[in-house]
Image (cartoon, rainbow, N blue to C red; front, side, top):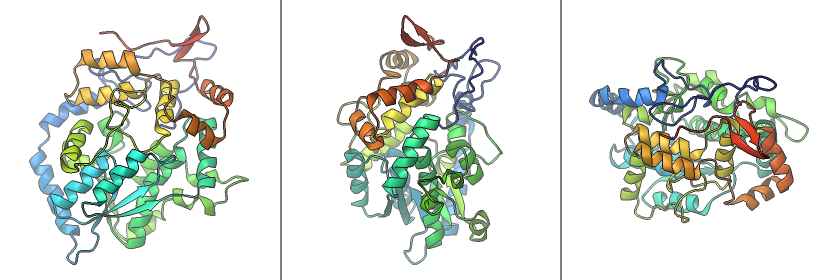
Length: 387
């Protein structure tokens, strides 16, 4: 997330933070919507899934595949691919359940994790072509440090690249079909711009919600416009002319991060999880494993918005019926907001920061509407409910 909550609380009364009555998502999540009963729109959508005619959507999905299916064995679709459970399950299903020939496209993690390397190789051994794009690290490191300082988010440029490069590859190889995972605003709570938001990719929405602005604006004394090419979409009119379309796989298939993990564990026998038993900041061990900078990314979410990776994971699993509320609360009290000690020294080295500089940057992004100091220690003004 790259948009900080407004700081209107400085010098005045802090805004009250409320939590969803079904999960633990707070109103401080950017763009989340709560109904009059105090239920977030992610939980509302989770309930609506039970009434979706999935058979009809599957027929629509099959019709799309038949329209684009290759007749000569060439690539017929693109899957943006991290090597994790979600994108790997999509790739595996497209190839082995639906007979497609996807080209997998990876925009490199910032600080490559050995588990991610292993899991990408494990899937490729089953018979996939893949493109791995690693941008100029002088540029990428500069942008990561800059946006960590300016926005409290070291992955703004990465968010741009991971969205843009698969489209650039589709454009280059004239592959007009892309399958993304899920529409985050629909699945996890956010602003739904139009009726088909959860079905087809809106590239303008990506720029506004995930990236925050046009990467052309990032040129500075260190980086030229040419150096920003991995972060800039091809011309929208040209994409329209080639009839490029990007669908969300989750629109056609009931989506669950846990069920995706179970699927890929069963079908990619050598798929690895976090060797520590769980990932820093959460109770899960199977999600977002490929980048050593991710613990910092989720920690900054906690600093800026008052909820960390545990609330994120617990809420998603609660919405899909995979985690009881009592267990979720136990995990939240134990792990949410945990300091990202795992890989911390590597992150400091990557950005060439001292611990003192790091702490100053973090505290600059603490929202005073959310945080207060009590006896010299930072505390949430509105901690999660304890029941």
